Image (cartoon, rainbow, N blue to C red):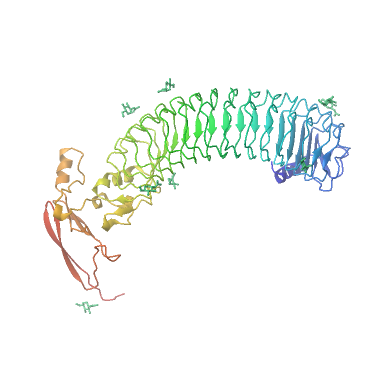
Length: 542
Ligand SMILES: *[C@@H]1O[C@H](CO)[C@@H](O)[C@H](O)[C@H]1NC(C)=O
Ligand SMILES: *[C@@H]1O[C@H](CO)[C@@H](O)[C@H](O)[C@H]1NC(C)=O
Ligand SMILES: *[C@@H]1O[C@H](CO)[C@@H](O)[C@H](O)[C@H]1NC(C)=O
Ligand SMILES: *[C@@H]1O[C@H](CO)[C@@H](O)[C@H](O)[C@H]1NC(C)=O
Ligand SMILES: *[C@@H]1O[C@H](CO)[C@@H](O)[C@H](O)[C@H]1NC(C)=O
Ligand SMILES: *[C@@H]1O[C@H](CO)[C@@H](O)[C@H](O)[C@H]1NC(C)=O
Ligand SMILES: *[C@@H]1O[C@H](CO)[C@@H](O)[C@H](O)[C@H]1NC(C)=O
Ligand SMILES: *[C@@H]1O[C@H](CO)[C@@H](O)[C@H](O)[C@H]1NC(C)=O
């Protein structure tokens, strides 16, 4: 809790309870609780009520804790120093506090000597955070057999002495984050066989972690190694971590992974490798982590992913591959991901997708294809994704022609209209800049390129029923050679005419002024037609 938060909390207690007995100057006393926040408090008050269990100092002025300072409060269970001027604990400072469970010193600048905490035989939680500690004596935690939580984050530790944790067999949580750790002795963590949470985030471990440093942590459930300048991981680094569920490796400089590095992590549910320098993934990297639910590989340099990379990840719910350099994906790469709900492929270099790429993803709800180089998508790409409703398509050079007609229909039926509003057409010329989802299916045509005489009667084609075939064959799309004038007709009538006038010079657009008339011969393989357009100003009226 922040000092301000703590103060508010205690201030609200003030309203609930009345001071019960004499209270030291500069402090507020409640039932078993004393709160001192006077910045003129130059010594620890000798008259703290003897039945006090919780004692908190905030922004006080005293600089040391004298021997036997709390000898008169044998029932203290919680002692907190927040942002005080404390600089040292004298020997025997904590003598007599055999009931103390929780000791916190946050936001001070002080040095610690060897046996400062030796008499705290019931201590369960020790917090020494943001105290500018730059080293710790080897015997500092000796005898703290009952300690379960040790929080040392936000100091200036560069390393730790071998053996410093040798008494801490009951420790469950260790936080060494936000220090300057460069190097750790190999056996440092070996005594911590009961450890469940270990945080080493925000350090400078560019020299790497010693082989086997985590080898005995058989109970570890969560390991934070993010933002620690790691360049590589020894192949056996995570060996034996059979209970590990969450592993955070984001924001390092890891450029390759040993193929078996995760192979003991059968309990892993969450893995982040975001923001590293991976170019490839070894085959079988994830075959022994079948319980993974969330995997992030975003912000790496992956160019492609091997076909078998995600086999065995049938429980995976979220897969993030965005912000890489992926150019293409093998058709079967997502084949085993039956449980996948969210798939992020945005900000890559994808130019085309195989037609069956998402076919096994029956649980897929969100698919992000934004910021790629896709100009079209194969018809039926989402035909088995019956739960897909959130599709991000913006930032691609969509070619809005007959090949995307199916997508336009699909979007109208299935997708949330608010989510793909930025999918603009890059072509053909007469639709450039239009919102693809707002186009009607009959606008998504393949203009005849006249001189080539291509069969462009593909609108509505490809579904095979006789009636549909007939409808398709009875529709004709005529266009000029530049594709700037397009007319779409069926047997009964012409339904749609597009004339693209010149927004820019020199791109083959037409230039028409008021009072002008212009005609074009349009061709299709059904034949040719002539279209004439005139522009006449009308008399100004009411
Ligand atoms: C400390 O707690 C014990 C047990 O609750 C109680 O009997 C004793 O009176 C307390 N001591 C003081 C000084 O209040
Ligand atoms: C802690 O010890 C170092 C080196 O002995 C010294 O430079 C520093 O001033 C000390 N800090 C305090 C708060 O006593
Ligand atoms: C406090 O701890 C020190 C070092 O372990 C020990 O010598 C001393 O006897 C203890 N004092 C009390 C009162 O428990
Ligand atoms: C896939 O996971 C299962 C356990 O769920 C395991 O038995 C099997 O060996 C794994 N497959 C491969 C190819 O490793
Ligand atoms: C995408 O490919 C182009 C051309 O190969 C290349 O210039 C560009 O850097 C690539 N972009 C990414 C994000 O890899
Ligand atoms: C989709 O990906 C793009 C680019 O990677 C990102 O900017 C956008 O926020 C993502 N949208 C969703 C809904 O995740
Ligand atoms: C996934 O796809 C393969 C072929 O690509 C198929 O054999 C398999 O049955 C599919 N699995 C599921 C669960 O749909
Ligand atoms: C357009 O044509 C009308 C009638 O033919 C004529 O009255 C008008 O002056 C013309 N306007 C321009 C700008 O040429």
